[in-house]
Image (cartoon, rainbow, N blue to C red; front, side, top):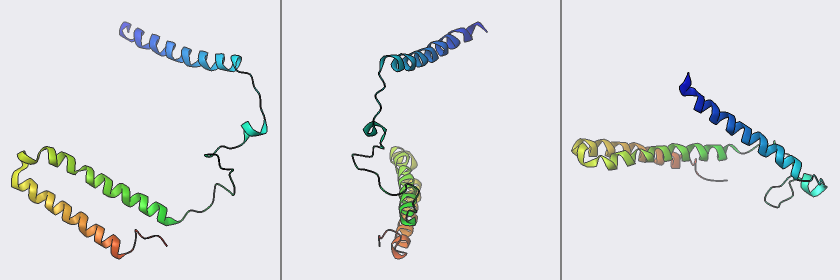
Amino acid sequence: MREYIPVLLFLLVAFGFAAGTIALSSIIVPLRRNAVKNSAYECGVVPMGDARQRVAIKFYLVAVLFILFDIEAVFLYPWAVAFRQLGLYGLVEMALFIVVLFIGYVYLLKKRALEWE
């Protein structure tokens, strides 16, 4: 039980620092509310319309495809590091992996999944 005392002390100091900083900033900083401070800030552009509008499915499709191909590209790094140890077997396996990726990419191009309309 004694080995947890430093951890508990650290947590107490961390929460105390967080609470003290918030309390001190609310005491020191004066509240001057006005319309400009209370307005929504989005890169200097005045917001218009509803934030809950429909978005085209193409945005989600491109995002999912990006993540899919990005994650598959991450598999190339461990293979490149262990290339010499894997030998010809590793080269053939990675060639098959790249072929499958290429077939998927050609399929997406034929389905026109990456084109904007």
